[in-house]
Image (cartoon, rainbow, N blue to C red):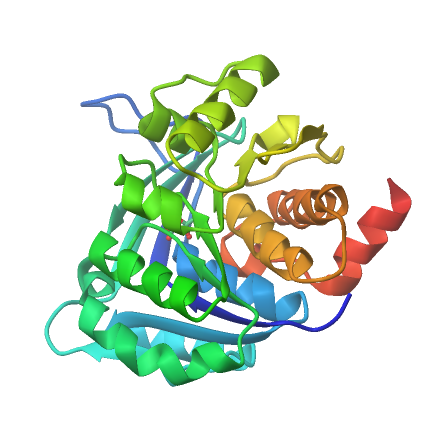
Length: 307
Ligand code: RIB
């Protein structure tokens, strides 16, 4: 696989993670097992994964002028990620995610985007020179949708592959769905967009077909322990998951999407690219935390060779 150059435009959060026996019910107070502060945010997680998987990586986003913002900058810089296009918000704090991870692996997450909403459509023109030497741009939905649209427009003008991770779950305009070269939601995200609840592989196929009807060009559905489903205009297939013992699935989807971006740009067939992404996601699920759990290239190659 050749070494691609990837730009990620997205969020950087600090994750405040409490491990709990189970997720609390409304009005209930639970005793947590442990608490940790971990670097996260879908955009920053995907940037870390892309860098660890071997891509030359640029990250564009916005953090606050505060201790959390400084921690994110330091963590991303340590991974060798180019932060030229990472802004600092003059007044909003760095984004945060309050996360409960339950014993049985379930999690619930509340994101407060704050400074993440400071990366604006008018900032995107400054990224134009980058588009002459990047192979792909990777987006998620924790920044303003207008900014996502502006990046997708630029990518399409400049003929750069665009991949949209459709998280967190929300309705998105058809202009966004149609402009991304590849859209990759998980089960809850595809339900929010299409209205199709995914409880089986047949449902997953229906949801992916609905996305095509809505204008999507190619779809890769993340199905967690069921693996992933690819749907294009001419073919579809299911790629089963790797057998692992999950410890914490937070950000496993981010590792998957970054893996997809790396593999899509190479000479791999679609099936091999989705398998590579499945392996990246599986490794992330075996370790706690968001950025710390992102896989390295050698680990992915090892898992691919083993299973
Ligand atoms: O995808 C996982 C991420 O979602 C977490 O790191 C959290 O910050 C939220 O953005």
